[in-house]
Image (tube, rainbow, N blue to C red; front, side, top):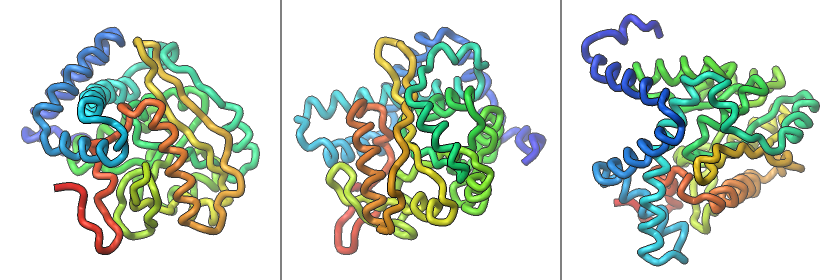
Length: 301
């Protein structure tokens, strides 16, 4: 898409918002996070539907928490969402020399070893609130391709794709399977997350925090066709404005197993283990358990 159609008056308010956010990303990092926390608190008050979805998810996934503990986690989650907005914009707009001191990469040797196999690498990710900035830290060391969900607003879609491709070598929509296979054939690292509800198609129901969740099997299917290696890849925001830890784990062995259900369960267990390290940083406002096995009622009102 060209920029000219996006200059029409109906987009002017959004352009103004983008301009304000661009200015805010040039504030000191700790100021940005402070503003982000306040934005998250405001969102908590103004978005009751998303607040209820997140609260329902926390009830399901952390039944051991009492009401006070759960509400504390819910508030921290919305603060994390607000900070995640600024982290995404920083990943798009700030230069390497500004961002690089904030990130530490752990386990780069696992990615290097996987690439030496020459069949491509799937970076198994998850929808953690600092995910965009984590991908950006990795692009400072290696060219990678990233899967994303297209935005319904043309201006937002333009910005998302354009800014991601300023740093990642290529941004691929989540339904472009042939493009994914082409990237793997070129021995590219391909960031892909399957921890959202994609419906019943190509999904199996496996446990996620002890709850059956529709889990897409695309990673198993891509590896079956390409022979790619799967390397788990997560980003965690550190406390006290200490920056971010990018975590690359050892490649999955004997994957795929030939059993898509077992593969999906293994992936969910890896993601769950990371979430438990910083539970407020997961995207709880998503209806992860929207689709239910036949006969089960919805968790969401």
